[in-house]
Image (cartoon, rainbow, N blue to C red; front, side, top):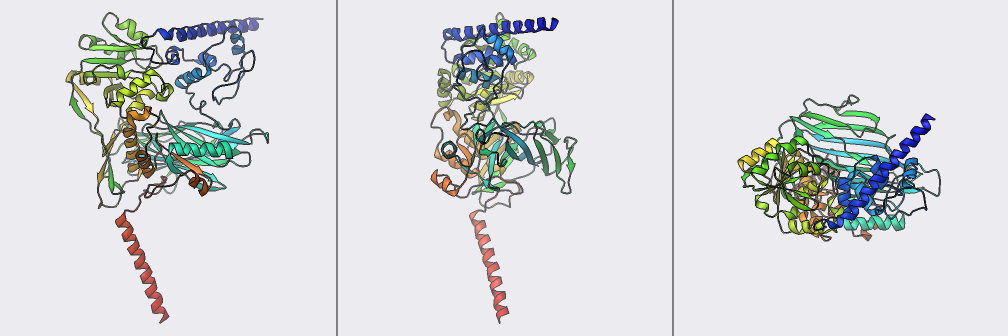
Length: 635
């Protein structure tokens, strides 16, 4: 009896909370039309204020994932998650159901609940797939603070029915460390490794969709995405055999308090909860105070190896050593890595914009409260700028602190030369493409398209995907630190200046710079080709810039730069096709003198013209010597 009453009470309280939240969603959606300018879609305002928990997830996933009473509803959007029956959802939805469209609900799920992987467009089902084995092969260049990781992944099709589920598509989303870039892709076809070819994103997309959607043959493709992620697709995955693919990732490593850290590259995709794994870590360069999980052993080569159930949280650290003198020469240019040493520029800040959300701590907010007496201080609320004073500080600022995220309107800054935006955020937030068609996005595009650059100071190390994308696209003069460092810069009228050009890029996450110089005759390479690849990726991001908002931002020169360095970027993708005829049919081919797929145990260097001449002369000399020897023997 007590148990029955408790169950009824719990279901009743859930239904009441369910109804209250749906009422709030409907109210915010309906009131969004009255906001000044109405630049952002209503779902953004909803996502900012919606309570971020399991109840909200169930409301948003009604009919997408959780069944509700009534007629069967067709999903108008792609959402790959196993359908579920929750008695609480069924009971509560009898009283009220959200009227928000499935498209808007998916966008909120992507922004708040890490639902981007589930929302990927699918050409074939992947319901019966699982990840059976993961090999992580890692090279760490300790005195260059660069890592190259190769992930070998086996995909298993567990379908029982021969007709339903025998042919499926595997989709993986890899979360890359900040500043990382994909530099290789392979797919095993008929037991043989076939390496990818780098081409434009449009060509790769067309080829993959044509072959998978129409012809049902073997391809794999990797695409760049916002938020330091890439998506990998593999087809077909059948019951006959496990599919295997490899992805290679080049990463700059960050130093913190005298240590350098490498964190495992994680992924979302076919269930890996029961996957086994092998991890090998090879340190190249001086090694001091290495910290690894206890299940690693050292082999006779000095490499660290572990066989274990797959561990997505694996990490390693080591004592930071000085960067050594280094260079890598390719195509007549030399690439050199060094510490980034920004110089301070004198500035006269008159206006501060505080980009406040729940990532801000109460201490950070209170530390800046006195700035209203020295500066004009603004915040963005209800799609308009509000000036802060001592009188309204608490009521406005503490309300904004309840927001799940914020989207700062850079186009509303009146004088960027004397303004500073202070921001902080969390990784889960809307991406630029999510509201690409809005008035807000158009205004931001015009602002940055005019070559305008804004000073932004980030509190701490965490940034929202929205801010970080602008940073990667070089739309911001970006600096970071704590409130004390911010107040020091304001007091000294200084701001760290990041200088980049066609010959110099900054690896922000690792606090390093790569310079490119025209040089023909240099000593033998003493650094890996990853220097040239990282330079190319960051230079492409710099050149894409504000044109990322345009449909025609991909151009031939950017694709050629990516293809030469073999880096996946907003303009380029790696694709593996089954036959040479497939590549020829879609106009996909390697360009001359490119770095090709990155690999281990190789610098990836391509001989320069004068080196080719020396090689040819050497071969001619060997041939001549052999000929003379045979001639003497014949006599």
